[in-house]
Image (tube, rainbow, N blue to C red; front, side, top):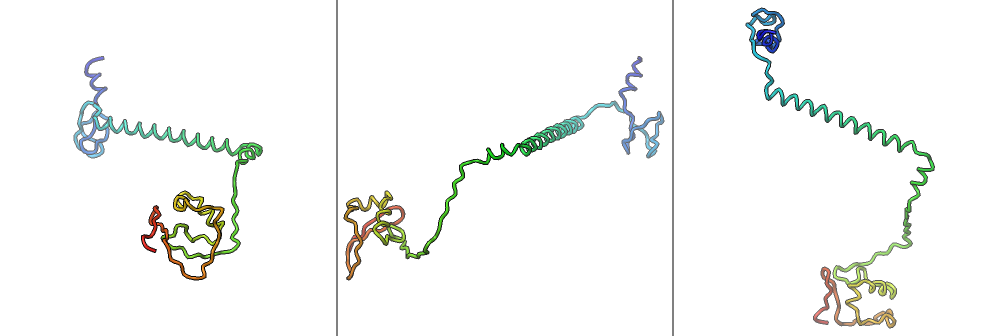
Length: 173
């Protein structure tokens, strides 16, 4: 092969205006009538970047399609399980709690009360004293001697109250 034949194989003939490839050996473009350009077929950086981007998009498309097929197959395998397998899987320890309101009671809740809503009975007071913060306030109270008293007259004394997370006593009666 001669040098001119090798050069002619690596040369792209295209029009200046419309960039269409020119097949014939004419000096003028058959589409727009302008003179043709002859330049070697060198790949530019921009062309390489676009080729790489297209390759990446194609690879991502293939990977996502494979993932989608895998998910569909996995779900299909799970839906075709035998009823015994589904029954064994559904036997989990499920705990249901049932509550019944026998009597609705409204109590006035004071914002600084040690026991929110107060304790109307001895049993409620004992239950409230099981909490560590309340028990710490009433360390000297004997549970065996705890009983309910209804006052017939006004009584004055020191009172404990809650402010935030701490319990305080009044300075005056």
